[in-house]
Image (cartoon, rainbow, N blue to C red; front, side, top):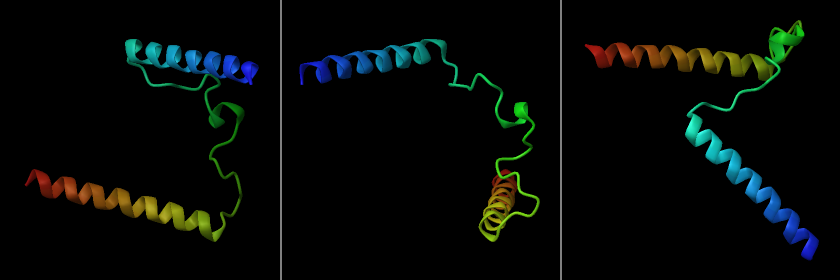
Amino acid sequence: MKLFLVIFVMFFCMIVLMAIGIFFKRKPIAGSCGGLGNVGVEKACDCDKPCEKRLEKINNAERTKEQTIQLQKLAHK
């Protein structure tokens, strides 16, 4: 139990130190490898023909984007 507590405290301290570093630098956490585009994958789902679930997500995202644009236009009138 003592070993568990020591390791838990060490992890907690590391997380707190990382959080303090983020607060002072004011930069969002970013990946170091450049993401999927860096390894030749153009999209997260690299299928030739997306499944119905993926198509539904894409359509919902497009609808949400269009609705946001329309609301912004209405807000500026």
